[in-house]
Length: 166
Image (tube, rainbow, N blue to C red; front, side, top):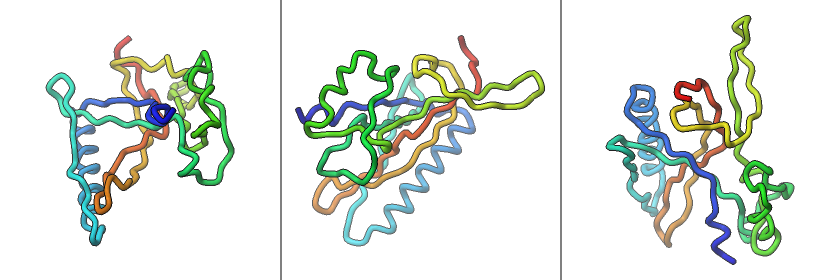
């Protein structure tokens, strides 16, 4: 089924503090730069979202890549913490594959007693509302029409920096 290609993992961050405002300005600058460098093509306007009256941004990554859009790379299984009952994986191989490009890394920074920071892999379920996180994202331009492009932000990894609210 084609709808399986739309299944994705996403995180929405609220913007309202200075570091988030700085990031938003940076993202808008990337959008403006991309818009200026597309001769003959139109980049869709930037779309921001709102969550509890604060500007927010969503970052996501699809679980699967269509076989039509395949790049070289090994086929992978979805991590057990993402697809514990292999419901999504039963569709792999029909029209789509899970590739390295579809993986999202989950990490946490821990400060040890000597002040040394260590980054460790964590389970997806460890991330909660209220945690201070740092994201690694990439930006892609995709065609949405004959002469139209859209800039999307793709989630690569998420790292808990501080468990502020637990």
